[in-house]
Image 1: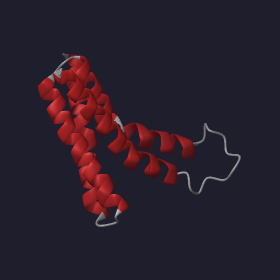
Image 2: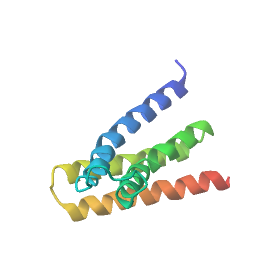
Image 3: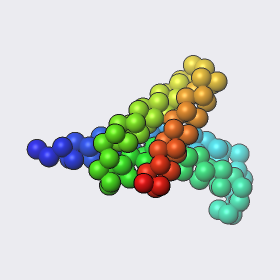
Length: 120
């Protein structure tokens, strides 16, 4: 079987795992929004930003697969796993500070890899 099929399968699993944590947090940010608020309000912008920031590792993994860059894919997968661990810690309310630090490491690491892949 072709190895790229395994990589795409890992990408799909990473997409599902990250969105299982990112979408509920983004929707929770809309909790206090009154009904009838325009979708162009600040509340919806914050929710969209949370969703987009949580998916930076998935976007980076996609570009690494598209360019067939195995080293970048492995590093992106490490940052995606760190972000999933931060979501698990946040949802279980174990320690918010550690969860926030891990999320920042995951997003910033994936963003740096994404910028590096665009420069190449």
